[in-house]
Length: 456
View 1 (cartoon, rainbow, N blue to C red):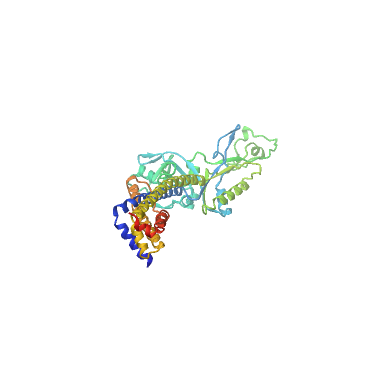
View 2 (view 1 turned 60 degrees about the horizontal axis):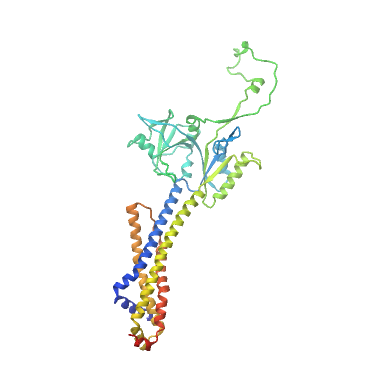
């Protein structure tokens, strides 16, 4: 009841000087509005960064072949022939922190349809799991090619929105045939729009097809081979012109002799891929997944302890940390500026409360003379300061939300509402009222009633 009576007295005292009360809270209003607006803009920037990284494939890892060397000159990462589809299967089977994986074969070329042509940014030979790794499972039309299409090297593909717009305009591409490097492909699906990535490249300007089809029909790197070592053997017999062609009784392709096998060893062929894209179970499991993949591939590729890796594993952790830390740093800097305005507003409230104590000295002395205690005076002036700051905080929250909405609408900047910032603004406003209002309230409560009544 005492607090309620003190609150009523404080409100009546503030109502006697409405203009001064409004001007006093102006610093708190500006400070809280700045805090809310900066926090929402910073959160929006962070969310935009996370969405952009997520569009590239959340928790994704890229495995590239190692480098090749010619005459002592190294060609750089990705130029070697060391990764195969079997490596991908082994990663899925033996790396517990890997959720999904897909091989990728890159190709390039012109795409033609009904008199229109286009050169897309990317032509990828891959698997249906590629879309799961990239978090790109949504299609606007059609369906994804299947594992049977990969085994049969079927000439089917799915296209991005940019390719659809350039080749088909308003026409539905499903079931239509396009030509990629003079190879006919049937369109079975259209990917949902994804937009540009962090580097500004159009992710919708893409064509996905079974990797076996791209590998053996489109790409110039059909396959890589290493010659099997074969022990040479001697033979006293040599082919002559008279025995160049097989006799009537032999098959069309007779078995090779030992000399022929020694002179023309059959190559050992395997289908290499340009990269393997892997998705970890979570962001926290990415380091463990990298260690598991590295250990497994070194074992599969029979690398000695003193040999370098013939592959490269890359993740987006550093990129994520860099961009996120930059956004966080800018948000904190802006927040510091906003907090400075809060301090300035608090000093203004302290100044006005000191003036109020001086103006109301006789009132304070009269209340003390009729029986009010020092703590009653202390509570009253503290409540006045807290009410001023709380009213300024509520107005600041409304103003900050308005500024955030205007910036989002007019400038198109991403913003994200921050409930913790709103709650903290209310708490900070009350704290400012208590901290900066305590000294004037304490000074008022320490006045001597007789001296106060004598004050002119």
